[in-house]
Image 1 (cartoon, rainbow, N blue to C red):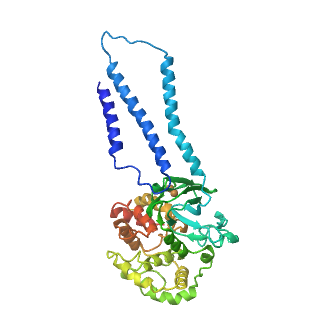
Image 2 (cartoon, rainbow, N blue to C red; image 1 turned 45 degrees about the vertical axis):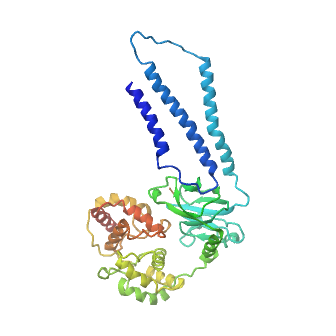
Image 3 (cartoon, rainbow, N blue to C red; image 1 turned 120 degrees about the vertical axis):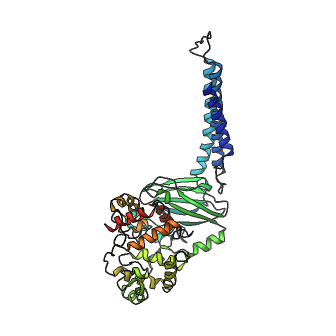
Length: 450
Ligand code: CUA
């Protein structure tokens, strides 16, 4: 009897939860209302069966409960019952699966006028490529992937020269145009999914997969990787901005082509030496850093990271939070590098400086820090030397007091909280795993031992 009541309450609770729950689909923002329809059909079919089977179980528990003088009636076979149950199940399963087959048929048939865009997935970030004026994407190969050619384009393929490269996780798309999204991965399985678009597909290393959709609502949507792809999978976020066509076009026009990125000025350390005079006042003649002036060691850091941080300062993404007075000091300094050439030169000069490990100032339990560092190693490397392909700078041998302050900034939302600092946002999510000051000291003590 009690069990029957529990089953009835379970059914009632499930129904209330389903209909009153605030956790349901986000509003649809693409052409794929058919996906919502098939999911709805599945909910109705499975929901009706769930309610019917459970209520029938509860009914039987009451009706056929043990009573003295009642004897069970044995009926091994009932043709009528078997035929009707088989028929009802077959109709239910067919009703559930048939719409899905039609939707899948549409899902794999890309409209001819769809605009081709490529998304490149990588542990743990997204970047994008558009075919240039020739309408064709150039050949790619992981063997061509370097810090200067992160998309791995074949430099000898003429079709690739005008390809437009978006080397950050924010993708703009025009509203009301079908998008043929090609997917590529350079390492492991990833999955491109914007919940509001109701379309998703795996990116598989070694092959090009695809999905298509037509964004129907202007707005900004979060892009999620929905395939477990390693330790920072949860932080592999991007953003899709759906624009009116004219806005999309002007955004696209600002993005560089492959030929333009290949022609970017090489840094000249000799010219950079003169520019570096401004930096040396705080960061030291050898880039060794100066804790008294709150200037971290920069010698030993690679050019790609130095350039990116200086650009963040120039764009007001770093160094604008009043809780970060040292960053606010750095911002006007970054603005003295007015040209791409000057920036490349000074970064090349800093790269050429001798790299001597900074004096440790933070003490902690390195053995405990070693365990915590496993998470950091996923991006920064086991040796803490930094990895460009995961956008992670060098930590080992750098100013530890600076690392400590930055970890606190990331944790407290001083750094990495700006909407356009998507790599910083990843780091903020990781820093949240270091719960207290002791954890931060321990992990830094371990980094000092590397
Ligand atoms: Cu990429 Cu999960």
